[in-house]
Image 1 (cartoon, rainbow, N blue to C red):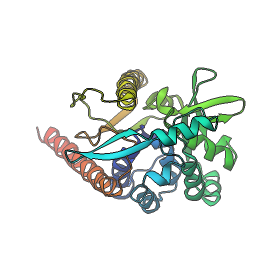
Image 2: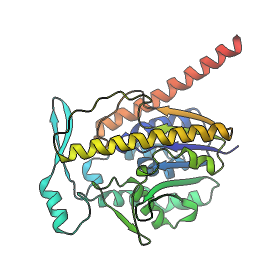
Image 3: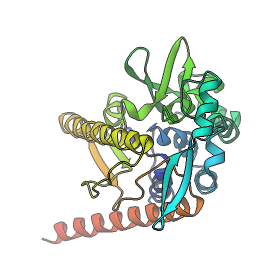
Image 4: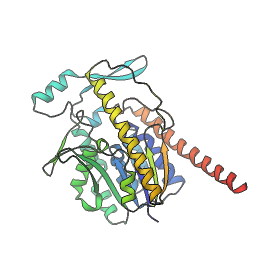
Length: 306
């Protein structure tokens, strides 16, 4: 029976997904035939396909703004103990003067992907039956595309991971094969249905949002905060649509679907990469998955004893 691990988009919140995946792979000893991710989930699938949890943890607990952005359009400030993003007017102006299409550039992320997703990792996955798939949004053709490592050269696969992670217009726009690509989450944030289409009969899906909306957003103070609010609004509805369609497809095709949500709101801005917070989220993800597993087992035992 084909089993899949699906990881949603969520920027820095991917650290929580890493903790959940660590428990599922290392403690629960789940074996997956397919790993499919969107946005930050795309960055994780190749490591997870080979069980390289320690390397993935090091990656997700050591990144910062400079690791991601070659030209950072943000200034991060603290207000009432909370980190908030404001506009870096100079960097944005510099980008426009140089003819860029976006407010910021994430070329450092592309270098990081090349460094961490090595040719050795690529070649080892090619030798296995396990598949790793990333989700991208083709803005030119107005469609979602799924890129399997089995169908790509090494450099192409790195490009697709980068495209899937690029939250435009704040990060780089990827020009490839005559089309412009951006964050996979714009089209499909939680690719459960694609996992089913690829033959999965059991799916563990890690969703980097709470199951029920738990926040009321503050009024926007500048153009950036307004853009973030609009994008978050749209992506939340894309996510809920993906999950609804995924659940219906799973029910219709008799697929076992296990959903792992974040129990609390981790952050209201997932483009802030804070090493301490991400280390905390990794541990929280592991603990959450462990508790959920124990609750499921206790519930199962109770049903058996009835």
